[in-house]
Image (cartoon, rainbow, N blue to C red):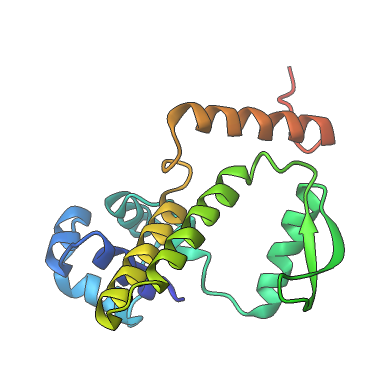
Length: 183
């Protein structure tokens, strides 16, 4: 997704009009429309204001417009930084696949748990007989999962944020990737 597509998606998820978002950011409705259509690219200051108004991290708006090569390089960065290991396995249908494990699952535990809940919601939705109601339920479940990802770590209980940060800092210290200030 492009930056504009992300702005539109999240604005609509929040139930905001173009004018309302423009007012929150301090720009006209036509600026928001131009951002969403890709005719204009918001500068960093505008992106920060948009992210704050939409209650998401700036990366949610900017880091999703990439091709396969860029995606691989982002995975390489995460792999290096979090002591990644590749392994071959099979999915539930017996198809061969490659997976990545990291030195610590604690950083991703809440994502795994939320994904599990999402998959349970999808299973419930798929049991709805009425096609229209099923489609609405599936869209609602997907929107809720997207919202959780968009606002992470704010989507987690407060003490979870501190726990995640502590585990992250300890891991970074252990691996020597957490630069210390010179005294």
